Structures are given as structure tokens and as C-alpha cells.
Image 1 (tube, rainbow, N blue to C red):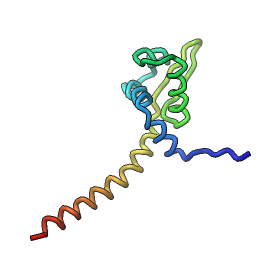
Image 2 (image 1 turned 90 degrees about the vertical axis):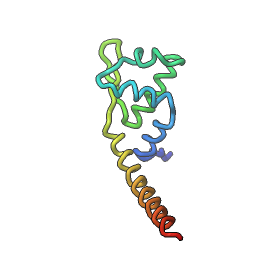
Image 3 (image 1 turned 30 degrees about the vertical axis):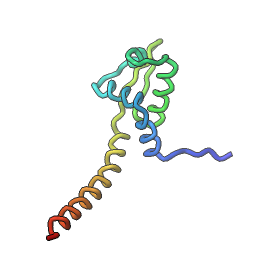
Image 4 (image 1 turned 45 degrees about the horizontal axis):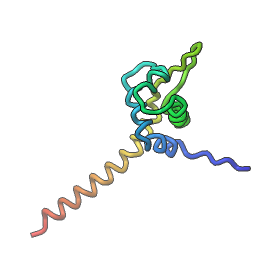
Length: 110
């Protein structure tokens, strides 16, 4: 059986598509490690549900997890996010240039 592995950018954007996962990344962006239980505390869901979201984030390479004794700590991994930003930047430039040309054409109209 052939197993399909989505491209890294596909995994990153899929991970970012969920508001809960974005909230988890936001909490981790303050820096340092946070335990899974502290990440889960403000969320209105069970710990197993939070763990599933963390699995997706880890699969996309956006976080790393480290277990010390009974505590699992998570840390943000920014490198994959930089790849996504670089991909988006190409399209921002395209649309910015296109809109600038449109504005110039409209301004040239009598």
C-alpha cells in the first residue's frame, strides 16, 4: 500500500487552519517551554483533545515535545513558519504589484 505524505507546506497550513492550534502557538510564542497541562488549562476541551492538536502541530514541525519524568513540555519551532511566510511573501508581492498597476491605470483615466 502506498502511503501519501503531504508536502511540508501543506502540513503547516493545515495545522494553522484551526483556531485552537493557533491559540496554542500563540501561547508558546512567549518563549520557553510550557507543559501540556498548562497549555490545556485555559482551553474548553479535554486533555486528550489538546494532545491531538499538539500531535498535528508536531507533525507539521511547528513544535517539539520533550518528556521529563511525568511532565511533557512543548516548545515552538519557528523554522517551518519561516518557510510558510516566505511562500506567502511571493504572493503578497504579486498582489501588491498588481494592485499598484491597477491604481496607476485608474489614475491615468480622464
